[in-house]
Amino acid sequence: MASGLHGRIPWSFLRKRFGVSCRLTVLMLAAVITVRGLASAPDAPMSPPEIRAVWASTLQPCLNSPEEIRDLVATARRAGLNTIIAQVRHRGVTWYNSDIEPRAPAIQAHPGFDPLAVLLREARDTSGGQPRIAVFAWFNVFRLGSMEVGDTSVPAYATSRYNEWVSLTTSGTRTDFLDPAIPEVQDYLIRMVDECLSRYDVDGINLDYIRYPEDDAGYHPRAIGRFRSLVGDPKATPSADNSAWNDFRRAQITAFVRRCAVTVWARRPDALMTVDATAFGGPPADGDFSRSSPYRQVMQDWAGWARDGWVDAVIRMGYKREGVPAQAKQFRDWANLSLRIQREAAGPIVTLGIGGYLNDLDGTLAQYREAQTRGLGTSLFSYWRPLRDAAETRKFGSESPLWAALGSKIYITQAPVPQPDWRRQVAVIAGTARNIEGKPLDGATVRLRAGGRPEQIGRTDGSGFYAFSRLAPGTYSIDIPDTAATPLTVEVKAGDIRLLTHDGDSRDGP
Figure (cartoon, rainbow, N blue to C red):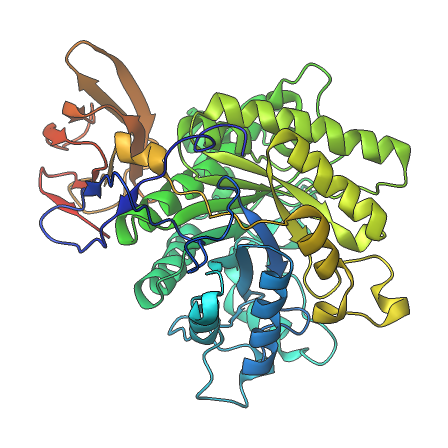
């Protein structure tokens, strides 16, 4: 890692328990330091902290049996990786025990089998000096998609369950995305994330499809109605060339990221909040992220989320073919911009996505070396097909030659997973604002003031939620003008996550 934790002495943290306050208690140790991801052998050589991840997609075998999970974890260790991003929810089904959505068809025949619980147990088994592997619970958020052949019952189930929430194109055609501008959609997805966090001590939450689809979408009647209400024009035209409409859609994605971050950090302060980020084509020549395809095409401002302190890590995608010169250049250009964004974010980190399925062994290793040159972490897509020729050689999953090559040529020494030290120095204030009838205030202005500091202004989302991050310790007043909400005064310390209600009551934790 090139900035943030790189080169610093890591800290060790006491296990937190929620009580009157969810302020993080930090214990600095002068001698023995414990960091997630370290091998139990004390004399093992170590590299600086960085994310070395692999995506384990449940569209292919990886979490459908204890045997698959053991192979997955053993493979990650053999490759010198330290993180498994395990897909636990997509297409309306789960690979963990949920009361909200059904178990995936692939595991329904084994009612006593809990894939996420087994994965956590195997990844944390450090007997014999094995390194601990971090587990990030990977949620496909807004996209529904369609299942593979043999799982045809799931699309019908998902379509009927979410029928009123599906986003529309400009022509009114249904998409396979839930509309982010419908408040109930965001409420539902936050419930799922919180359920997972409350039942499993995961090391992180990873959000995928945290964006709009590539085709122009978001034209659900309720979304259009909210947009017109917020801009104060009942005839405002939602269109791709309307900057106000684009800002509105972008704000829906950012609002969800912000709310999810508060949910993760309040429930499990040591867990990392991570997002999968697109990188279509090449980056803007001038480096202005607001000109990029993620920002303009799919309304995904991942650079802003890192800068504003709403993520711990951006898990970059944007897979490129190393054998195509134009794409190889795009990979390096995005790597350079990623490094710059990471430095500017001052804490949150950015990794490079390696599309092994597009490349041969030499090309994949070349992209890993580009990441190493810049001190950036990596994430490989994917475990089951880590190289382009996997289908021809029949070397899928743990059978791929890539793992041994990574462990012997790239990740020769182990590295701990970075910890969110930057969050230990600042505070978060968040809350939900409702009117006197108890309905959420949508688009209400929220003013945050502290003596001697510039005023900050935020707005509530469709569920009435607001939040401010990267706050220095101190006393703040929170006011929601033109509403019945009572102004609040709250004192926060470093590491606090303070959750407030509109009537002046406050609480800590989820």
